Image (tube, rainbow, N blue to C red; front, side):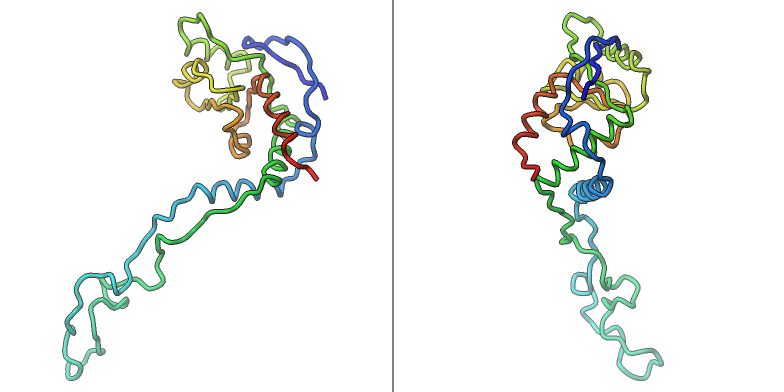
Length: 214
């Protein structure tokens, strides 16, 4: 399929062929949903921790004698039914939230994500994000956003690590710059506008060839 390539000023430069397998595939929402669930699960850390009765301090002595007080018998103030006692069935920091994401599943998720962005017209191809010789990088970064209707939340994907682009957009709120090799499906779906550098297409093509689609 054909796609328009723009320059940083938002002007159309040319139309090029892009990979149909990646950018014109059926959108599988179940795959996208499962990927996002797995990705967010993998970001979780098992920090919640409560103490059970064996870990609570004190309570070594029987609180009061067994009989004659009119109260229910008690053996330790560490008991979960006592204030300050241990917690029964509380969270521990041993819970493992990690979910395995296979290469084939990740590839299917990327195809669905890129195809979804194309069909919703949420992704634009930009010739390059080069700011050499520009005095105010932030000003130039704002100019790029304005050229594409100044979207409120933007993901900029570069072909490789681009220090100039990072500096140009680092002071602009809700703009995230990342190289194509480090991008993930969650990032693609989390931004209503994606600006993809033309050079990143080569990486996507190589990646697609290395992944079995059987």
